[in-house]
Image 1 (tube, one colour):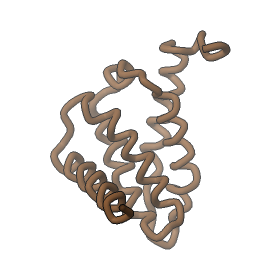
Image 2: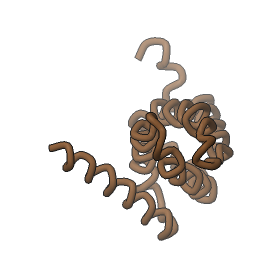
Image 3: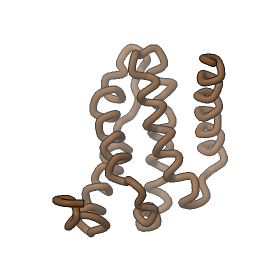
Image 4: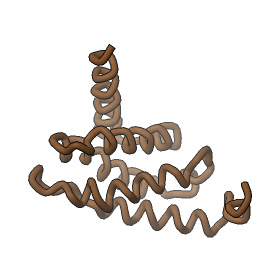
Length: 131
C-alpha cells in the first residue's frame, strides 16, 4: 500500500468520497449541445470516485439511501446526454462501474434499476456487434 496505507478505510477517505458523491450529484446534464459539465468535471469526479472506491464494499453502507438514489438519478442521465460525444463510451463505462457498486448496496427505485439495466444491455449489444 505504501503512502496510501494511512488513508485506507479511514474517516478522512470517507469524507473525501462523500464530498465527491455530493459534487457529482450536482452535475446536471444539460442540453445535447452543451455536454461539457458531464464530459468535463462530472466525468473526472466520477472516475476519481470509482478509483477511490476500489474494493471497499463498506463505504456505501455509510451513505444514506437518499444520497445514493440522488447520485444514481444524476449519473444515469449522463450517457444519453452525451450520446453524440466522443467520450460517450467512457461516460457509460464509469456510470456502469458506479452502478455495479451501488446495485448490491440497497434497494433502489424501479425506474433507476430499469435505466441501469438498459445501459448495461446497450453496452452488451455494442460488444456483441463488434464480434
